[in-house]
Amino acid sequence: MSRSPLMLDLLRAVYWFDEALQAGMRAAGLEGATRAQSFLLLNLASGEHRASRLAINLGVSRQAISQMLAEMEARGLITVTADPDDKRARIVNFSLEAMPIHKTATRLLLELESVLETRIGPDKLAGLRAGLGKTGATRLNWWRARAPEPWPVAHPTPSARYSRRSSASRPRPAGARRPAARDRHPRPPWPPPAAPRPGRSPA
Image (cartoon, rainbow, N blue to C red; front, side, top):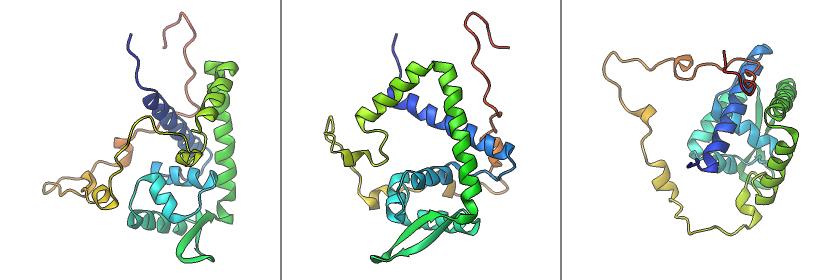
């Protein structure tokens, strides 16, 4: 039986965590964030605070990261200040007003880990952590671990990477409307549904 690449499984797991996290935030009466904003906040929690590095980690242009930071700063989620060592650089941090949101998100993520531990077992969860730690995948900027690449990778230049026109910017036919976010991405339930017991089909 063929199996899917591990990266696809990890991607689905990341989406599961993020969708459940956003559902939990809404259940707690807090405004959710887009996936890009959620990933940016996770970058901050991982210790990355330079705006230029955030743009690279998220795979967006500096113009796009500037717009995202401006929107999140207007919501009171972050603060953006000049780097005292490099006036051309910007430093991003959590704002004091966002500390309750940060604490709630941390609590929800720990609860989701408990859900995952219940589904796969504590031994497998511990093995997952140990395996990711050995590969250096627990470090956000994994290339800094100096692990050799299995084959040469051709990295596109910034001009080639950002010159492609996104589908969101393409002109739409007259009278056509972009579907609402709730239609494109249905909200998952909270708490996450429990996995069916062995020998029983889900209801």
